[in-house]
Image 1 (cartoon, rainbow over the protein chains, first blue to last red):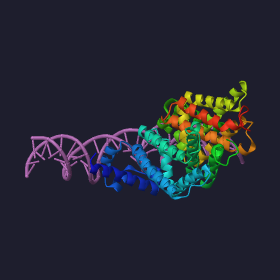
Image 2 (image 1 turned 45 degrees about the vertical axis):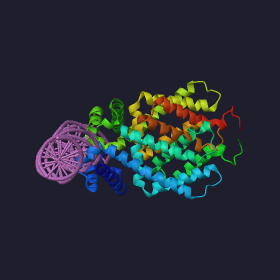
Image 3 (image 1 turned 60 degrees about the vertical axis):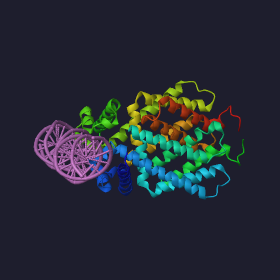
Amino acid sequence: MSPRQLERRKHLIDAALTLVSETGVERLQMKQVSERSGVALGTTYRYFSSKDHLLAAAASDWRAKLMDDLTAELRGSVPPARGSDRVVRFVRRGMRAFQRQPNLARLLVTVTVSTDPFASEVVDAMAATGRASLLALMPDVPPAAREVVPHLIDAAWQGELVAWVTGRSTLSDAFARLEEVIRLVLAPYSAGSMAV
Amino acid sequence: MSPRQLERRKHLIDAALTLVSETGVERLQMKQVSERSGVALGTTYRYFSSKDHLLAAAASDWRAKLMDDLTAELRGSVPPARGSDRVVRFVRRGMRAFQRQPNLARLLVTVTVSTDPFASEVVDAMAATGRASLLALMPDVPPAAREVVPHLIDAAWQGELVAWVTGRSTLSDAFARLEEVIRLVLAPYSAGSMAV
DNA sequence: CTTCGGATGAGAACGTGGTTCTACTTCCGG
DNA sequence: CCGGAAGTAGAACCACGTTCTCATCCGAAG
């Protein structure tokens, strides 16, 4: 893929993200994306075989930026003593990012439940990096639980995200429940714990 | 609402469920539903203000039947000693039901992420009954955790359901992960546990 | 430098399917 | 028995993803 093509592709994704963040996924039209990005409609379909495909690529792009920001932010802050605090803080920042871009959060949810094969790939990859980031914050979790625990927290996170995005819960309620989950799950492994 | 109207409503929901289970949500057309149910298209919109509305009602209906079956089945079987086994068994049966009706499972996922206000209500209600059923299977969980634990298991369940429905994982993998989660979370409260 | 095939631009055209509208009929409470 | 609400059958509307047309452009081979 030539540099020019890579640039076009990037423009398409950026335009999609801008438009989604402005008006929401449901109002996004392929025509708008092509106009905004300066790429012809037909050409858009040369790069992304369907709207779902484009949305998945855009979601992946934003999510990657987001994770970079989160982990960068984290490096700058003092790591607190208890392991669960680090995770809670990480998740809180993630939630705040969603709060800042509710339409993009909704995009994430949309892509997560898409049956488009490319979307599934993308979601798989996103989930994997998410779990890895979580795992990095919990060094005290023993090998036997290093698969399940991040998976579990990720699932709870997704659940709260969906609940918030669909208007079933407020962001603070969502975060409160999520924090409770994290503390419960990490309790056995935290330094100040009673057992083990 | 007159008996005649209740009947029409039921016919609409039944037709929707039949068609969804036959062809999948994405192929469901309002016209088909009205034809199959013997209700005029315009009238359909008098009962359900949109397709999302109808889908939510249908999903709720199916899910209620499903939960009835599950709890009834459960009463007939011998309750095993360990608490987590009961939950695992319950969840396994739920998964099997999904396997039998993959298109309806997908419907459930669709409705779960719908932003339709009625859908949100319905999803909230479904989640509540689900948590209640789970809670009934874990009498040994102390009061402090009787909110979080079912919520957590429900979230993990939803997550696996989505992963399966979108083709990101097989049903057996999904169940295996879910079982692991359940055992991890319930470990501290099971009779044969090392601690507490 | 010329040339030619694939890529792109601009936008019309197509097809699907949710939703609404029309004109007529049926049902039912007062 | 009447009037209006509710229902029927189906056409009509319309938004939007996707595809198509054709003129133009670009970039690599010769």
